[in-house]
Length: 217
Image: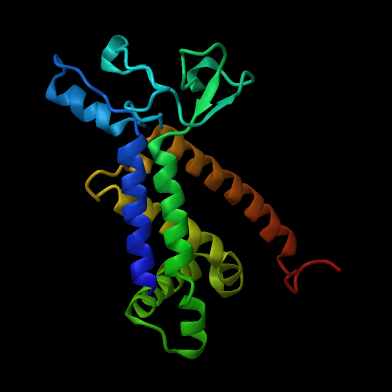
């Protein structure tokens, strides 16, 4: 059942992306330009056949369409403006958000039975294989570097980040999908979260470290 639910999540994400993603066009585009346009995020817009959509072509080979989700954010710099046709800075949803949400759902669905399998055994073939991956991350990556005590404490965090990035990359291999980690904004956010977690977790660990016998009382 979990494998079927995961497959449905992938199919739904691809279908939504293909239906609502803004399509880039351009008769004079080179092969490299065409490849680049399919790597950059495509904002989610109202389908062009909808009555409220504007079918006029704008400069750069894009069709002037209405964003599906647009949130005013004038406190941000102009580089974050995803809808120049409106005044001020507008944050618009892109196809990358679809596959990020899909990656989160895949993590929640696929690993829903892994903890019970590790504690008491059982589970289907997907649960057993994912449990093996989780134990590999624990025994080969986290525990050897952080030790048994702190490694066990921070293991859920490392597992979530590891498989979230893995599923985003795997989703990018599906025809009609997009690779969320191809965006500098996604990788920068992950890098910032990792940096802050290293600093905060390091401070927490140093404060909770037990005093060795040579320490003054």
